Image (cartoon, rainbow over all chains, first blue to last red; front, side):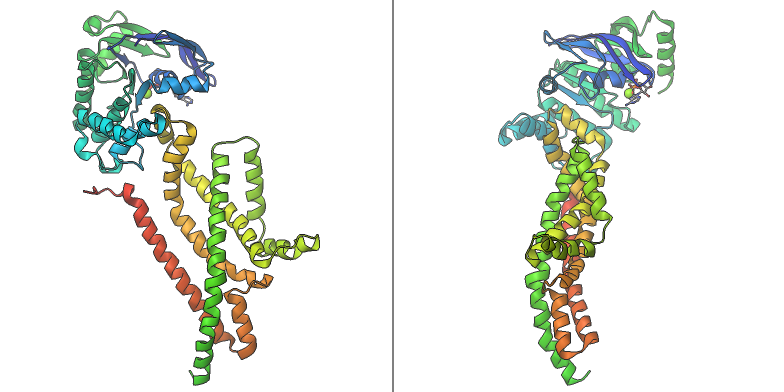
Length: 247
Length: 226
Ligand SMILES: Nc1ncnc2c1ncn2[C@@H]1O[C@H](COP(=O)(O)OP(=O)(O)O)[C@@H](O)[C@H]1O
Ligand SMILES: [Mg+2]
């Protein structure tokens, strides 16, 4: 799978939030998107999964090209079924157990039979270390556990890419590690990921490529080796220094 | 209390209770069920923003909530026959109560739908579900859980409001009491007896309501199931 985004634009009223962003993610890569708050990172991910409709730009997914401003409902549904999204605030289905959260996309959306879905879901919960909590409802789980179930929900559908929007930002510091560990394991298993994050260690050590966004545009990008050692742009340097100082 | 009065009360008890069981309860149960169907449909049409339909729903709610139930009963029972539409009293009562309760419950359910966090819907989209699937499996169940206590209260209120249909010749408990009073002329004792029977009915409903709430709250309980 390859994902290529070209010239994506989006405005909210007078506010130009994405000013022509280009981005590419190759099979098995983990691309980290960094950047100050308000730079349009969330909006970018949301446009890629059509939670927001982009005003312009194109998306090439597995060689198939889509015009982001004119997507048919059918194509949206089809693309969404090849991708998965992990939210900052988990968004587990509150009326469903951990297991049901994972089977829902298989049984309801993909018409898989119940028994196969349960097997698949349990395997996904196992991978994130949540199998023993499969019958718990979201309110009965910690933030870190909810986020791991959310990752299992994403995994179970065999997505070609998983979008993560600051998956650890809502977590208490002591719970961040367990979620990052799961994401690192997925990366080792070759799962393609596009991750908006403020976790510098993750970006440095797990991701293959770093993209730095500011003010709706990509300011700098490059392989994560080297990116942190010698950023070309002054503002990137300044941002990285602030991030390294704050724990 | 003298023996005569006790005799009257004992004699009238089944004569009030039976219309309660054959009229008041079925009228409430049937009307409330129909009202729920109307309410969910009207609430969803607005929530989903179905164009055209939304205005129709607002108009319906505006008219029904802005006019007294008793007037609505009179319009259907006395007004319609005047222009040739004759409806049997019990049916007319069901019609009015369903339409009336449907409007109030639609607002309760709409508010509950709107209180479901938008992230629930977005998560549904992201696992590949369609809008109708998300509504049916995720949003509506959560909304109905939220609306349940308020709907339970409406049901109890409706049971008591059915006493109004005595004025349109449906022989429910209130009408039965009036007829007994015409024979015995013991208004205080007889109306208190009727009040007592209503109270029993409502007590049962209240119990059912809290049982239902407990059942429905499984996913809101913090302590784990096992
Ligand atoms: N639905 C919206 N309506 C209006 N403005 C929005 C909306 N969503 C985001 N924005 C604005 O777009 C800008 C980028 O937001 P966002 O994509 O959330 O940035 P980031 O994730 O990088 O912090 C911000 O100025 C934000 O206020
Ligand atoms: Mg964001």
